[in-house]
Image 1 (tube, rainbow, N blue to C red):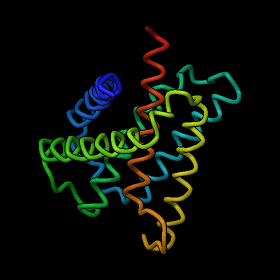
Image 2 (cartoon, rainbow, N blue to C red):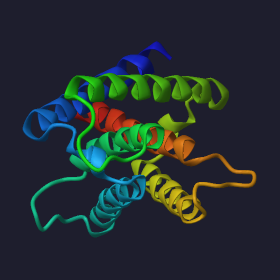
Image 3 (cartoon, rainbow, N blue to C red):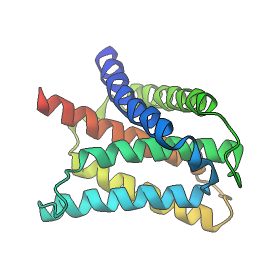
Image 4 (cartoon, rainbow, N blue to C red):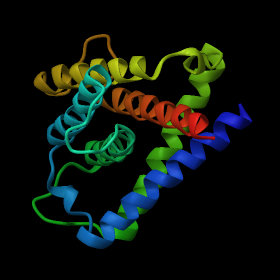
Length: 181
């Protein structure tokens, strides 16, 4: 598991670097987005990944890997929005946003470690296309929960689904990085 933790940290560092760079450009303007909007943004990215996996061609010349980074970052933003609620204007500093980003990714990594212990790192034997399907499935679940005002009877909430989405995207990027080496 230490290899997985190291690889996880490398992927997260890449995602965090982009998050920081975008905050330098825009600040935490995403604070005005409702969680449903972030869910739809993840949906757009996952749908593009699936389309490219099926069609094997990109008309805009970009591959799928940056989309997984986007899914991770939007997922973390979603977790923050669930905690703080959305705002009508920017109400936190970039430093506070980054602090929350790190906090939620640490919690999500801890969840991954607990599940990996139970599942024996089964994700390593899965295809990347399955991660895409699981991400799309989790997004559809989130959309249903959102349509029910966040209430569930027996299922996990939106936050748990966001964390699973983030972890599947991290797994995809770990596999990609392994193939590049």
